[in-house]
Length: 435
Image (cartoon, rainbow, N blue to C red; front, side, top):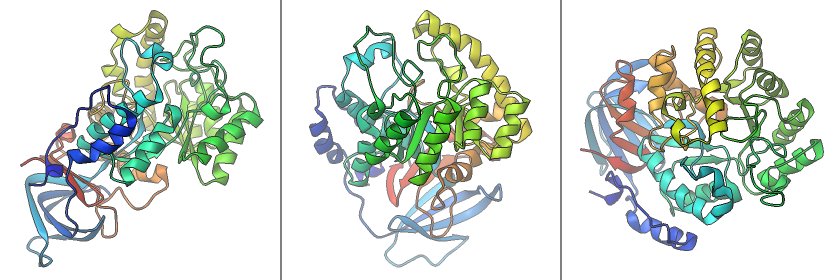
């Protein structure tokens, strides 16, 4: 079997340079042959209908799905046939809130001045592969240094790294001293400007947007409020002004780019939604007014709720741990309210706050918070595609991208089977096939 079909992870030593990484990564896999592939599976999930289809045959040519049928079918001549057996074939999962270029640790809060962009690039290639192997074929990477996420996506397209499709944000945007401006250092250390996402006032905010888009950002991430994993005293105070957020959204829209807003506090959530952002990330402190605003504006909530249970509080500095212990229980209650009220929800994890590859555990926690299993799965497929503004993925249909995963059993009966992905196809190439 082709090595690219094995469940295989490449571990690169930290001493490898970025150039060596890009040269050596493809040698870990052989190129899958071109041609037609037929996938047979006992079941397929129709995410639109919310039902299981039995005995399915999916034909893939190039990077697209060219036929979907059931029962015995006339298979294309010379096609390579993969009988996946007792699994459920599903659209590839999509994670709308990842940070591929790092992972939380005891020294995370000093890495901004002890590591380089090359470190992030190497880590990003490693964590991107882990993410793909866990079944996530498209991710939004909502902030990294030095446009590493842009480089990762460009390298994926060239076949240099094994990675999901990445919608990169470049640098996340925030005010001086805010959640998107890593602080705690002496004056003069790591003082950044609009090019690196730190912007004050409408003019600088617009410049920051333009600079990210100039260098490849396909989504703009802003910090509308304070946060948890930073050293501001308040966890939810609004940071960007209403005027700054409107200017950011308007400038991004001129480039056909959407805006995602990190927002914990109620005031900032309402302001960001009214400014026209496409999604509220976290949305930790909701009330009835905020929920009404999100629904009225059609703003997606990306709740990142598994981290409430997964984050390692022991490694956090005391002031940051205090904020986490305060806001995370409120976030759980807020999500339950949002689900009951019918707020549009897209799947996101904040992976890096807990280990990459555990992304699918978000499904089970969404269900625990009150979502039906099919709604949790739609959050990571058709709703995620809608948030991205794309119609080429999210369902298994003729003409869609051949981004497919398979899991044992039925996810409608046991949502945790999403954590045991046995097959991954991205753009018609098989990256994982456990037999």
